[in-house]
Length: 265
Ligand SMILES: *[C@@H]1O[C@H](CO)[C@@H](O)[C@H](O)[C@H]1NC(C)=O
Ligand SMILES: *[C@@H]1O[C@H](CO)[C@@H](O)[C@H](O)[C@H]1NC(C)=O
Image (cartoon, rainbow, N blue to C red):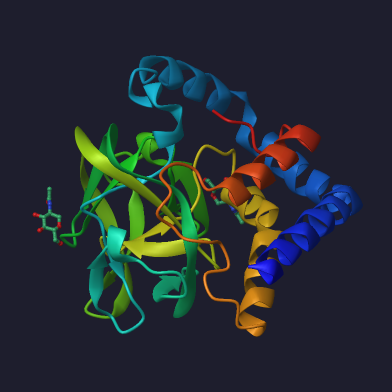
């Protein structure tokens, strides 16, 4: 109990040093992304955030997976998202190889609230239900990965799926919008995971995946340290509903210092 408290204090101190000490790198990331994404994107997200404002009435539900989502473990078994335990090993990919990552914590979780999900089905027969602002990588024509909010996914966009243990790209064949009960936002050390066999991001609500992953660097460092020191449940019990306090504090700090990095759509 004491050691956990101790590390939280170190975490907060380190975060302060880290965030204030690394502004140029972060600024570079931001500058890159903001100029890349241009103003058309901004307009689009403004329009759609207006039209979907009813769905984000519970604003915290804006970046999650539905409760019927299956997550692929590193032993290739799939388990329901709500059964994930801290330290579980999951499979993920960087677009070229499949590798193992670790489930750290649920950034957000709610078993009982309803949310509106975009269910994406692929030609390979996979499907995943995400809230509109959750990021999912699509494969551009030049083979680069581009993380976009689920609500911007279109038919014929290509996504990465794991089919017969192989990484393949598959075209989106349908996108339907449906209301489901319960939502979960698992965070992994790589920031990515296979949900319903489709490669997805851990992040949502943010301008870009890389900045979100960067801002969670200290959380990963803390997690790594905790494992090194055999601290069980480094983030405490997971049975609290809602957004986890640590990532929330981290998001808020980065948002305060560099609002453009994590601009909430
Ligand atoms: C999604 O996939 C699961 C299992 O992979 C399947 O049971 C379910 O019927 C699929 N749902 C849709 C809407 O295709
Ligand atoms: C790949 O294509 C996308 C979209 O067409 C573009 O934004 C990106 O800059 C391209 N990347 C490279 C390395 O050419």
